Length: 197
Image (cartoon, rainbow, N blue to C red; front, side, top):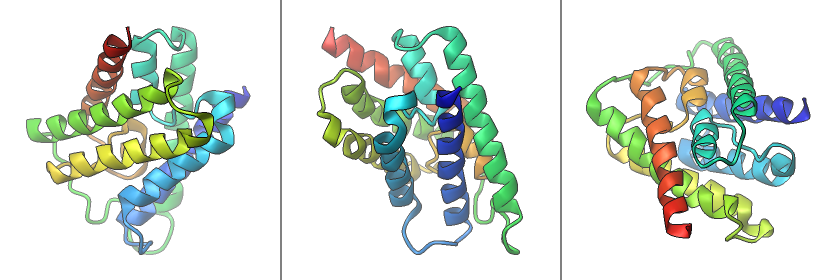
């Protein structure tokens, strides 16, 4: 149960940070904040759950047989619970809603942006999964990969979420914000696996 709790907690923290940042509550850019939060959880609880904190990561890991089906389902459920709690908490803070300034588009370009961003994020993350990175550098690599993925997705015109759970928690939930990261997550890990094998 500990690993499901920390997945929920990590997704809650990441979703809440992104939601409040998008609502203009922080002076630091959202991509940097998201990368720092993920790096924190990789270092603090990565040894417990792997710190997926993203359904696209969990599904990508399932696609390369690094997590069992039943466990993956529980991870994803925990992640969405954490994101939902973050959404309700962020919605109650101040007069600015969590989706202020967030335009949700279900265009193919949005889907492509989310897919490509998630691809680069999970490709970089896979180097940690395959132990090509020292434990001391794992949070930097994972956080840096997230920063790269978010930046690419944002530059191409999406909200740069690349996380279906966080898209719920940040008020950016839509079909392309679910499908794009999942497709990109699977592709990123499969390509890395093919290179490694």
